Length: 307
Ligand code: NAP
Image 1 (cartoon, protein in one colour):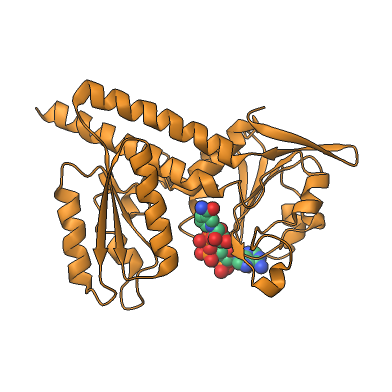
Image 2: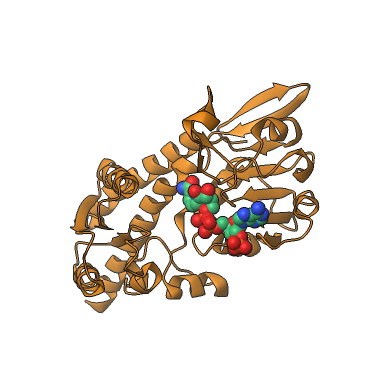
């Protein structure tokens, strides 16, 4: 078992997977690798964030990514465009970053303002710098099972599963949610690990019964406490990706952020589970940093081969 906290409730031991600790370990590894790369080649990986508009939530995410890349010794590039920026302006920023040898990874903060189309702008990112793993080239590489940059949150979930030695080969894995950002790539990664994978969505019939088959249950519907007691097979590993913000009235004395899983029920039934906050959340930035390192290394290798 990795850095999980064993908690005993009514005689049942559920390991609470400590995403904060695991993310800190991943960041530490990335920082060491960045230092080595710098020593060996003089190359400092650069992470560019592109924020269009002034949505306060998006600005907080971008600031977090900037800070985190700085902390592991990467060079952050902070690109901001006004809320009324045209698609051409965003495209020309992305093209400039694609062409910059100092930039290893590019993150376009989604969603952009409503007059812009996030997916078609994402397509303009050089797949070699697409550290969110969202371009059609990288999504296609994942579907084909060939190397490429993978979306950070599903990669983070794989890391959490590894931390509890989750046996994935031949296991029944159920993913609730089919978004391009999370559900689909998550299902592909689990398939790549030889799990038997079912993807559920809002039209799935008998959702509880399907989930109750799962040895590994991954909830990413964005519905507070959708996953109740009857959804959980005793002994399952439950990963809660949901991040739902409650209003102050709903939250009462609790934290304002809840997941998709009824934590108390899961704690009594599951073998291991992630809390919200402190489970999947911290992993995303850690894996973004690892992706940026991967992209920087691959770019350096290409340059060395071409020289
Ligand atoms: P999304 O694009 O809104 O997708 C939600 C998915 O859940 C859809 O496929 C939807 O089905 C399905 N769904 C919704 N209600 C359902 C229900 N009652 N039963 C079964 N399926 C249902 O969301 P997302 O971007 O994938 O994110 C999902 C959740 O994960 C959100 O809470 C988000 O905040 C969180 N998240 C967290 C992180 C992180 O921790 N860093 C990263 C990414 C996402 P349809 O396709 O049929 O509509």
